[in-house]
Length: 349
View 1 (cartoon, rainbow, N blue to C red):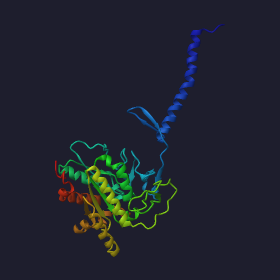
View 2: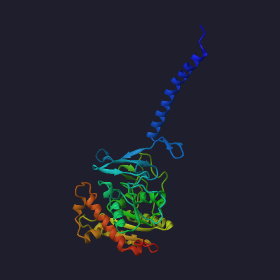
View 3: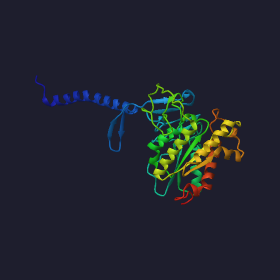
View 4: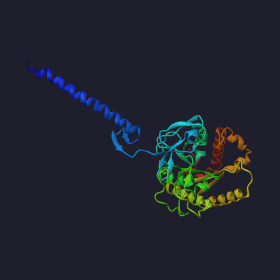
C-alpha cells in the first residue's frame, strides 16, 4: 500500500525536530557554561559576543578563614573581582561592576558633582567591616550632611602597595575625573611593599628604581615568583611614587592629599620616629600636595587604639575606628578647604 504524502510530511518534521531540539538545548547549555566560566562575554545591549581566556582567581593564604578572593592581573598582581558578593568576618562585602568596594559610579562625573577618589590597601578596602561602615562611606555621608555635592569613591584593594595604587590610578582611576585624590598610606607596611615583588605570597609589580623603570612582564603568572630587586630604599621609592601620583593628578586637574597612619598605638621607637619625620619632609616637598598625619590627630584627640581595633584580631580598624577616621578626615578637609581646592573650594556649592 502506498504511503500518503500528507501523512509523511509531519513524520519528517518530527524527525528533524527530534534531532534539532537536543542540539539547540546542548548549544544553550554550552553557551551558559562559557558565560558562567567568563570565557564568553555577552553585551546584552548590543547583543554582541566576545570570547576571552578564562579568568584566573587568586587567594590569600588565610582564604579558608577570610574567604577573600581576587582576580589575577598581569599588571597589578591582583584586583577586586567585579560583581562579587561575599562576607568579611560575617559582614556583607560587595564589589561593584567596575571592581570597587563601593556603590555603582559611572566613569563620567555627574553635572554639579565633585569627587574624592581614595587609594589604599586593606584599611581603605574595609577589611573586617560592613560595606556602610568603611571610612569612605562615613566621609561621604558627612559631606552630604554638610550639603556639599561630593562623591567619595573607594578604590582600596587589600594588600596593595603605593606602586599598585599608582598603576591602577593611571589605568582606571583617572577615568572617574576626581577633584581630590587621597592616598591612605599605611606606614607600617606600604614602604616595604613598594620595594617588594611578593605580598600575600602573590606576585606583584615592582619598579627597578626611583625613576619608576618597569620590569617586563610586570607580574609573573601565579605560582611563579620574581626575585626581589636589591638596593631599593623604601622611603625614596614611596616618595617617588607619590610624586608620580601627584603628576598624574596635575594632568587631570586634581589635588593630592596623603593621609599617613600606622604608628598610633605602637611603642615609641627611634627608627619609626626618624622614618616618620623623613617621610613627612619628602611628602610636604611635593608641589600641590597636602599631608594629613592621622597618627598625630589620633594622639591629639587622645583616642584609644585598642577601641579602634577591638574585635578585629588582625589590627584593622573596626566600625568604630572607621567612624573616627571618617570624621577626622572630614574635619581636615573642612579646615583646609582653601588649600585643597584653590580654584574650586571644597565648601562651594
